[in-house]
Length: 54
Image (tube, rainbow, N blue to C red; front, side):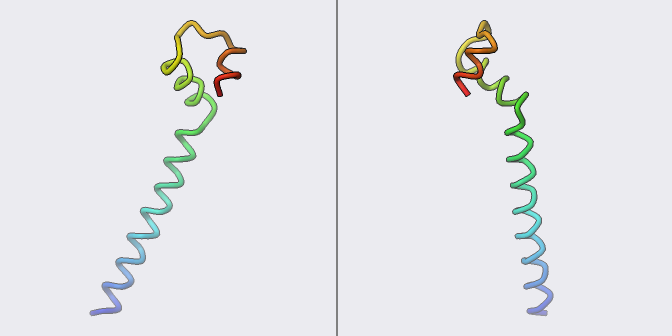
């Protein structure tokens, strides 16, 4: 029973870790970073200003 619980806990930790990396990767894709720059600063930013902000 103890081995079963340890195995289940290890799988849960591994799954949470993998999901964390996937979500972090997807939120740091360049289009998402550009949207973030424009929402944080100004919608009227030029491409050069977005690059400078990033």
